[in-house]
Image (cartoon, rainbow, N blue to C red):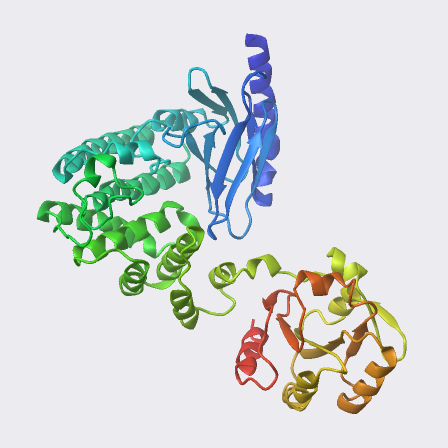
Amino acid sequence: MRVTYQIGLVVLVLMASALSSLAQRRQAFVINRSAPTEEPILFYYTDILAHHKEKSVRPGDTLRLVFDEHSFNQITVQIAHRSDRVTEPKPSLLIWPGDAVAIQYEKATNTCSFSGKYAAELKFYEQLWRNPISLDPWYESHLGNLPPTLPELMCWWQDERQRTDGLLAELRATPGVRPMVVQALTRELRLQTLGFLLRGNSYQELYYPTSPGVPSSLRKYKVPGAVKTFPAAYQDSVLAQFRRLRYVQSLPLAVSQSRAGIALAFVHYLALTQGKPATFGAQYALIKRQYTGNQKEWAAFWLLTYAKSINRPQPHLLKDYRTWMMPESRFVRRLTNQDKQTLIMPDQQFARTDTLISTNGQKITLAQLLTEHRGKVIYLDFWASWCAPCIMEMPASAALRQYYHDKEVVFLYLSIDDDHQDWQRATAQYLPKTAPHYRFTSQKSAQFLKRFAVSSIPRYILLDKYGIMRYAEAPRPDDPDLKTYVTTYLGR
């Protein structure tokens, strides 16, 4: 067994050295070194856009983490088995691009050990696992075991805060720990310290007896509409800790995963201090007042995402959110399900297989057409000879073509006509020969039309100069807003 373990370590070290170039490729590896008889390990993590990802990895297999434009600088990976109770604390660790870490998990003894190039860092994660202030602070056992009074919670918090500060002091004094790891863990755990304190939200008598997240020991005291004022000492402690959140507001979003959750917990607290239920509307209004820049955008996004996830969407708040956010914002696109329709790249299968035909009978694939106009803002106009509303938009479309005649903008007219001759007559009557116009050879089997739900016309789609779909349902040619969007993408 010792020989096998040593061989495993050698392989891991060799892999780590070979992976030094992977930092530039923004990848990392987590290897499951558990015994073959153990259950698969469930790894789960999230990104800036609240995409929750999980992967079950069997003993001997490897999890490959890819850092994309929506990843945090360091991915917080949590470790579990599918059979684990939600009340159990989960081992967690931060993974950077280029890292290679091996994990050995024993279900029977509920022990987890890490090995890799940075042994001192990995030892710290093992210590941190069962610390109440950790990288996995939200498991229900702590919430369910809250002390019966808020002053007792504050005493508990003081003890755990001091213990965590002691662990961080040891980490800073430990040889072999990367400075970026010390910095990140210090920031994350201090934010979690504020989150731990904000569990005092559960003591406000604003919840119905059946509200989830309220300890059963406290539910008998909950009277709908009754409000207690937080003790002055508690309020002073929260505001003193809040300066840490103020500090990270100015940092890029990718720096801290904890930031969004703590930001929402704080506005929840502020709503309660005003003597009002912490409704989505109340929290949203406080986010707009309390935060600035990317923190405001991100916190509002997470609030709306959470409301949607529990089947309580807030369309009026989403409508307001879109008034002060850029239309191409990744947060808006995620909330409106446009993130699944991001790129129309020439190498995608539908682009290579969907065939178009010109009025003179020449055929071209959608991929070829998009490649031909790459570098321009593209306005796709889906129409047909029998579509009266489509025809009514043609004069406005002609005016736009003239307006942008010397700019990098192209208007592509794609017909879904079945009859080739009807289409030819309509294009001759309504479109000049210089306007690029094509017909799908088979609109019933066209994968593009199915993927982007072009089930009714007229329909317009706007792409930027890089082939990114900015609007799956763009404004019509006679809509004044269209010029604003086209001009915006021309400047990028």
